[in-house]
Length: 426
Image (tube, rainbow, N blue to C red; front, side, top):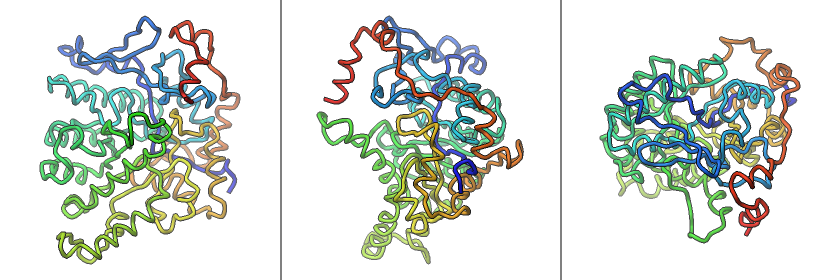
């Protein structure tokens, strides 16, 4: 298959929230306490909520930047590609990158909404969270029907309230919520505690996928304080591996056989060994640990419950049959630093040598549409959904990789860019 013939639905992209998120949806009594954007003296834009400043981090919005300029310094909206935060520009960037539709994880609230959950006033926290969900569904996603898979946040602090929000979201056509990879690290009950049962039941009843993004607990794999940042970046998928083991051996698969879980941005190359290790552990230890999956092996249970996702994973693609071809979905990760936008279709084809068209369709869009109950073809004919057709819609859209205006950067932040780059590689 040629790259232009692919149909691509990304199960993991991101948005940088525009300053208008809470303008229309926050109740009047909480308006003065709602998150807001403030421009600091150094020129950076930060969100302010609950007495805290939450910056926009550079690696979250580097689409269109050369790799030598990637970094983690706070950025301003006018320093980002507009498609990071403007939905009209996002669609143009999606077209130019050949992406038909995508799930957009949040940025400043944290992938699981833990910034909202940290507010002591839980009435405020719930109002802000629900306002965010309403904005995401009714403004961002609704602006271009069939181009986004809507996804909600849930109140981490109360499973009963979370279940009610899932029911509310399901009524709005939402079939995904994002959740932490480890609630215990945030001070909540672990996956092994029955207190979460109302949440799992609501997800199952409404066919809503639990999408777990790496880093959603706010804790990444860091080996030592002085370790190079490359260590943390390399080990990021280990958070997802830990979450998968935690969930699979928990009581959840046994009590909620219809629950579906997506492991977002975790890669897939590690899955075959992981499945072997699950089955070996079960064979050798279940008689004393008490695990019992009946006639199933743990690997069977994994394939029943988990969707695995990758950005660029040639090894995983070649091992697709060992993973389960119906358990793999593709992601673009726009506008993060791991994304290969706007040439992701070519990257996928390059990594999928010898893969059948049928398997490419499963990986590229069919599995995502099935898992997330999403039908983009209600809104446009299939021949208008290919990479080639989408790029033709936005012919001439500027996707050039350009250095940032270093003079303006230096002026705004008061630092030397050359020094910044030296520090990043030191």
